[in-house]
Image (cartoon, rainbow, N blue to C red; front, top):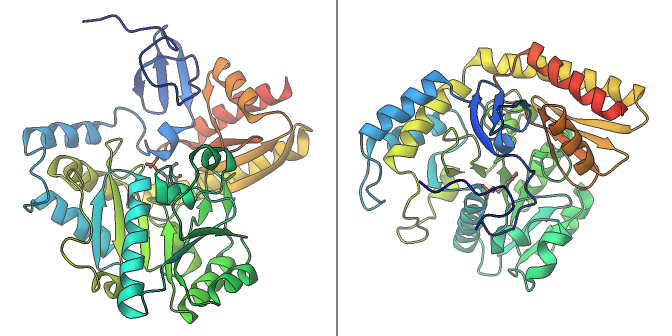
Length: 393
Ligand SMILES: Cc1ncc(COP(=O)(O)O)c(C=O)c1O
């Protein structure tokens, strides 16, 4: 075996500003580096590892899935994929599911399905996708055009046409719908990368009403905030609305790459064989593991503890913001929080790592906390203690 190259000198394309940390193992909510140092992990692999590390049930689900079929392509059906689609349908507004391999892919699939539906039920000119200020929907061409980050967009212009960004304001969105060319509006119920901004339930309800009134599809991107992270299985449940399309990914298959698009029966009815495809999506191995994860993340006790501990975490962060001049504000819900800091967020991310706590950023001045959903109140308190020490220095 070749020796592991030191961080920063390897052959990986340098598209990431990686922290100088080589992770070798994990257990529960802790990760260990190559020097044997332990870290409390409040990133969850960016909202992926909802069950933490080394969860015995998840390990067993992967082991038994590996003994079965790994891949057969979508030319054939397999029981795990069918069961997973049924599990997601039975928990949601949807009548059917398309599986893919990432969040960006799920959003691009949703854009295609929305256009197909609008073209079939309205007219060929109804093709526009509208995304919101502060949004992040992925880095592929369609999803990048729907992502409101100038630094991510500028080097790759021209971006995919037919996709625009409007203010997070109902009147502004209505203005964008008036000319009849919009197929869909896409929104994250909690904007993650854009600074952990929770869209108010009233805003989501108004958006639902507006899109319905204009015959426009509502796509909710729950790639980061879905599957339990806000304290309900789907974030949209808390607003009492239902979207027409919903995208999922991150925690869906316990760390294996998987995305999904959930479609209402009305949209699904317009999709024909050949409209979309993927070689790997929904294969039996990932789907078997995802069946286990979906079951675990639907556990009412787990969801209650995310709600209760999350509310407690929010109160603690709000109090931190009152006590420390370096913290301007705290925003979030469940196990998804952002704090605005006066210094560059990267500085806090590095200092916290050095103090044994892993957090990430969400924009220039927002530190983001995404603990595994299994983190206990004591573990949250321990992380908060480290964070407070770091912010005081
Ligand atoms: C809300 C949201 N949508 C889409 C994506 C893109 O997902 P992926 O990185 O799996 O393509 C992300 C990733 O952070 C996300 O947070």
